[in-house]
Image (cartoon, rainbow, N blue to C red):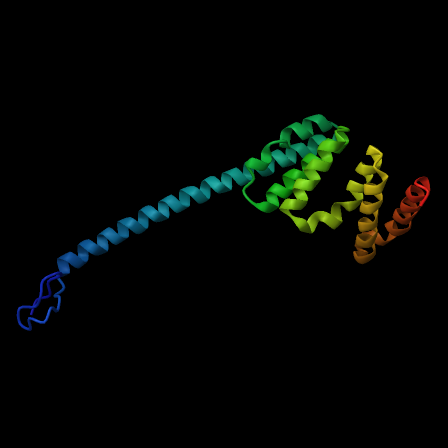
Length: 185
């Protein structure tokens, strides 16, 4: 009894299908072509994603180098719109951090606050670690209430993260005390 796909068996008449080896080979070949095309398309998108990731990382590195040389305006201009090209939340948060620091260095303090806010929306885990820098920005802006609030967050962060921050505790507390005395609190 030869199996033929799609044709009822003549011997039983009960609707059993017979399998035709030629049809199975064609179906297998089509499956292989589909899998190959899907794999190629997947590889192409993965490759483009990797190139985009490397490009954004390179621009962040260039911005950080410019920042390190004191060229804050160039550092900011390099990363200002890179968030739209970032390929992950982590990378986007890194773009916002570089932009915030560059804006602060360029004395564009409202922009620096804005970029820190974007960073914190993208990665809420960065709020405590950025508090000291953000506090300094608010202090430079003359917004002592926001500065004090951020210094208090930074103080708690320094107390709970022993690695290198415990020595900052007295200095942060002194800054809080000075700002509070200046406000008559």
